[in-house]
Length: 85
Image (tube, rainbow, N blue to C red; front, side, top):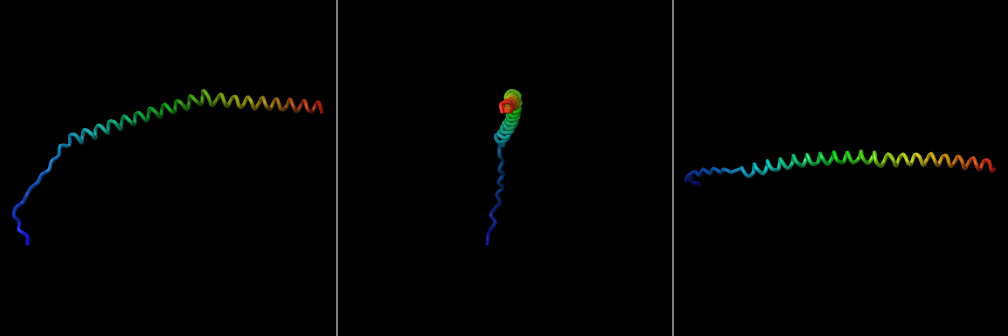
């Protein structure tokens, strides 16, 4: 059997200013990180376009020119062999 001697009321309160400030700081840093990642993405897109224009396109053009020159040379060799017999 238990006796009830008294009641105790315990009220706990917290000062959440530091917590709220930390959450706001984290939110600000997350937003900044998002902006930085977006800027990096745009830089990568520009780099890809620059590489295509400055490197890939000329290399492709040289390959095509080489194939045409090889075809002309092959025709000349065939013609020479045909004439020589």
